[in-house]
Amino acid sequence: MDSPEQKLQAFLDSLPEWRRKWLRYDPPFDGIWISQQPPYSERLKAARQEMSAWAENLDDDIPIREQYERLLQQIPQSWREYRTKLKRQALSDLTKAKAGRKRETELAERIWELQGEGKTTPEIQMILRTEGKNYSREAIEAYSKTRRKKSQK
Image 1 (cartoon, helix red, strand yellow):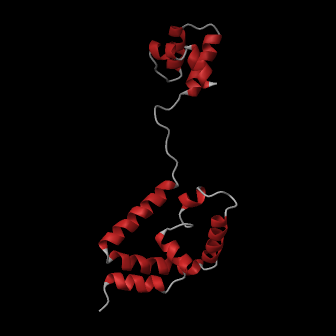
Image 2 (cartoon, rainbow, N blue to C red):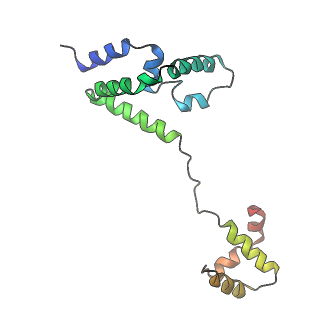
């Protein structure tokens, strides 16, 4: 009787090379790889040909992927590696949030506008409270610093 590894290998051997790459998320079916290629390189041209072959056979994708995953699940180490690669692939498409506190540009511009009208810090604090925003004097004064005005613009 065939081992799970032999069944998987026999299944993969029955498929064209581009389909095997697609199942394993190997280049060019790896979004990270594509983004790193020069626009007119030979490797990218070959990748486009493989991707067009894949696009012509979209109807076969789901059943072939399901069969591949069933075979992989019988091999725990390979299944773990596949899931890790799948997770990395999915996360590579997400944009990372910027580190640090979100800038309150609208608040800063509102404070600068009120200061331009000649309002004092306590007056600005009262105006902001009536608008439903409660900030300390120190917070309001922090937006008065000229270096902030330059960096925000």
